[in-house]
Image (cartoon, rainbow, N blue to C red):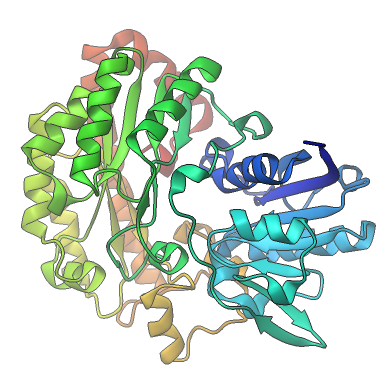
Length: 454
């Protein structure tokens, strides 16, 4: 097949002036999937992927025919700057995708030709092939000044049709940890998470596909750890058994460590044992709150504080390192509720974790709550959606009962608690693995302890 010579640039938008380690080390796999899909099904091979923002180098735009911009809400203002620069220097078609534009397609600017809504591989292919916008499902565009949104696109099934992301085009950050997905979507509907709105349903790559991708990563990059970045790696127990069996059969569990996300109501002895058997060293769990009333608001009736406690105990019993995340500042949450979360962390056997102030992102139930009450709208200053609450004095809040000052004071109590927990963990690891812990401590002393370390 003849190679298509159309030059394509994908830009993963980052804040270049406030780069977090989260942005430095976790590449945007989404554009990697788009690139590999265009290569396989469209023979588009002149593709470049960059991470850039305010300082996007105009030289990289030379001869580009298509520019794809991927952005999250907190960087959407920067994405608008990127689109404006592209428009000023080229005649390239500009398409934008990601959770933000999917939730708010009316945010499409004059410098953006088309928005890719939701799953983007097949949609992007049809755009790049030059199909008429009115014939492409799952996009938004403007015609005669009016926003047009086409019907939703059917999701790609089976997922195995999608090739592995083009990691050879991506900036992977540290090769010690490589991220991958074994599924898309989540079966649960937490009020703060936009995953369900974006993916609509939960789909899984087959066990054979997952094993093949792990094998490729090991052969090409020799990482120390593979992070399954799925919303919920253990969602399908039958598939988990298959993956675990194949990992052991290949001996990958003797070559590399794994990390994944779990959910308390799905954790039991079998799940913990399976994870341990494939050398999962660390799991992340969204425990969210130590108050059952608040937890019910956040996660419905799917999990309780008691289940969170039991899950931590079960995972620890099987020798797994357990990290958990918590959210404070939810609507109707009181200081007393928040202190129940604080006490939960104090008495838990967690190895580490983080506490965040609720961020009402577009596409979530909390966003709709704010819209209905008039303190959120579709055309806000997206700079005020900074992920880390303490970094922006104008950062939006969702709390009905606590001021920013009160939330900030409480948040620093949690940070102090997590630092204490982290020091205890490092001391414990120093006795167990002195050679491994020294480089980590040196890095922390050099760069300073950051929340992402916890």
